[in-house]
Image 1 (cartoon, rainbow, N blue to C red):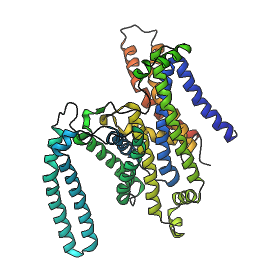
Image 2: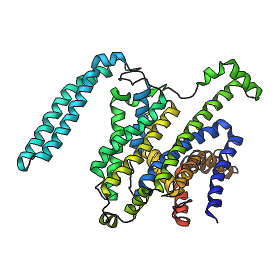
Image 3: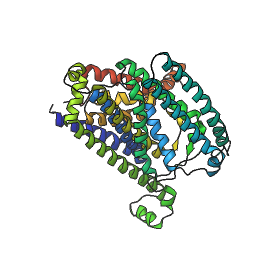
Image 4: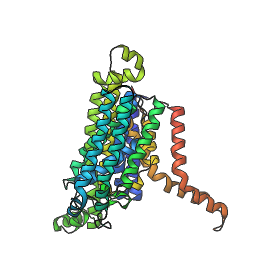
Length: 433
């Protein structure tokens, strides 16, 4: 089949699935799937940039997505004056001391030699640790004690939520730079282990440092870039327009806000796709693929392999951070307990593999298609099990077992799709050209 016709058919299939969802289950459900599918497609583009362009096996996607979500809190929430007065400056001073300790240890490693270097580094790290904790801990305790039921954290900058999206990318990029400087020299399997471990560390910090973003108590009620439904329902002009379309104000307001999110997410996706395509077809993109295919030959040609790996690791992580900030904006809350590797790392990898590693359009297709399946497989599986067991008695153990097994249909389906694609189209549905 002609590639252009095939690609058009595949994207049309996703469109048909979304339209069918809207007709059968309601347009609110279809738009919810569409919005999260767009966010997932952006995450898949970030992973595709790292793996498809450069062959970097990063399975710490969850950590960078979480940092994007954290950025939404740090940028958009109002500051808590009582918390800043209680211990905000002590927390800042402690963090500065901790960073200064690390910098001093690195300088000692570079400038000293022999046994003196080892002793000086140990003295700096141990002494700096105790000084840091002596300053940081009292400030942290004081901040977290300020009305912990509703605040107990420092708050943010009270800026528009849209600024959190690029800020999430910058925060994830900064973390990627720190990680890449130490981890990118590792072999691919060790890099995967390191990034997964670092992602878990990031999640643990967000969960346990209440002063930062309330930890597992969550931050709710984040600002929105689209109007609130209740405001639309109280607007006579909007109510009149909704009535002219034959919609009640409640349904019209929910559709309006979801369509607003879809427009914003589509704009971001198209911008990132355009930049990724320009990069792919540029000399830089060809160089990255040459490094991916044969690092030794590329290094022999004078290419800075480690430096280029660091570049693309930062870029891919920044895209995941942007997507994380967008997702938190869509949810209206930061819930660190929901960041699980199954959803925010391995499912994204399934999207990239199924869509087509090394092809940006394949990553988008995989993100949209796999997310639709992830959402719909469980209710479809429950309906299938009800049909299969319809001839059994209501109190039948087999019938109960079949219906209970529908909860596992997601994992079964993802594994089955992955196996089928790897068997019959190992380069993905839209392979790299």
